[in-house]
Image (cartoon, rainbow, N blue to C red; front, side):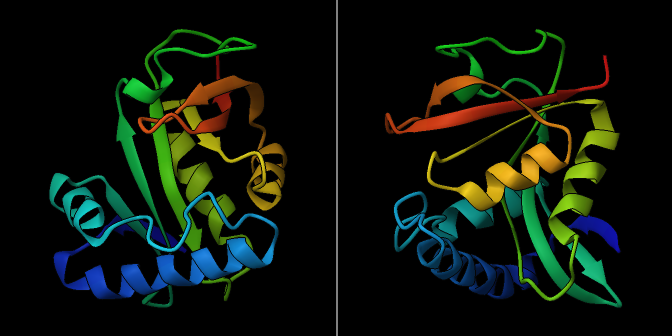
Length: 162
């Protein structure tokens, strides 16, 4: 597997992956985290344009996608009922999904992101047991609760090399 930046001509494929992810989440007890329309096409287009959208390929086929960015994320400025592992510079991963065809693709993406900076923050919905398991399996520690821009509660996790 390999990670690379998403190209603009791959937007339709990426949107299809997110559509499938919403169906998967709804079928696994998490129908509200992304609802029927998140993420919007305009958001993913912005992610691609800003260079923060990445894909994971296996044999030339895109099997996963995610947002990765180094630097502060406004969503993580305040944490409740807990604390971050540290206040060192960090990167974030958002909107990670795979097409389910290659076992371990999401873990590969998380490990790649961690290898880029060694201090990674991520969040997920309380009902997203699949993601919580993935984060636990990959060495992330639960740190507390954060709130998204729209006021939605999320479980916050961090993995740090130091």
